Length: 236
Ligand code: GRF
Image (cartoon, rainbow, N blue to C red; front, side, top):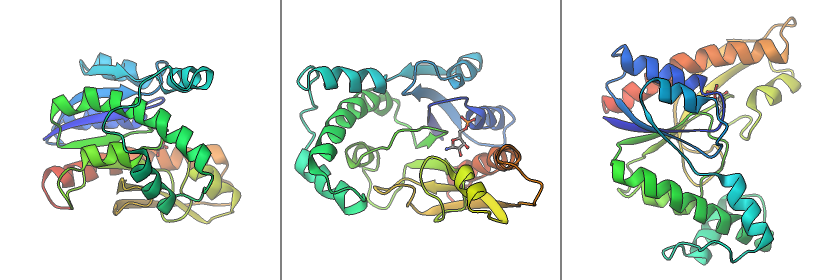
């Protein structure tokens, strides 16, 4: 199968995927790696492996729109009312003005992502530490066949516990005695999509946030390639 990846940071999961493809443990070709962050270290990992890279600079888009909300064109096929309606169904916020501004900037960024991604005709998009919420606008352009999920994510907690950006931190602060990671498909909600695989580890009194992250990441690097291979074999 053909896969693409989106990252925001260090890209150790991306590296695990690159290595698993090279070792033949995943029957897939990674055809691109994209990032919202031009500084993402993971982009170098992709380049070193000879994988095409691209950046859609979300920060720059958001800053530009803050100065002048008309400076960038919202894509023609972006139906704000429709997306907003579906977003509010799944989001805690009911501040429509805020949601509207958020969705407009996302639509512009996501249109740019789609312009790179769609021509590659990938079977699966893997999010590997991609720290931006994807809206229904993007998701609907990817999941064009009903019931056929196309975007996978790895999350640093045992979902449905601790959605959000700091799974290991939340696990640590709650004094959990087990932690773990989850691979799941992306739906409109925040880390709510169907669960594909999970791994758990024990937490002892000696553990620190750092040691928890270390244990968790090591499991992530094994779990994510396994789940991608399951997808490639049509076994999910
Ligand atoms: C991982 O902990 C992943 O679960 C989370 O973000 C982190 C990314 O790490 N979504 P890396 O960039 O793969 O090293």
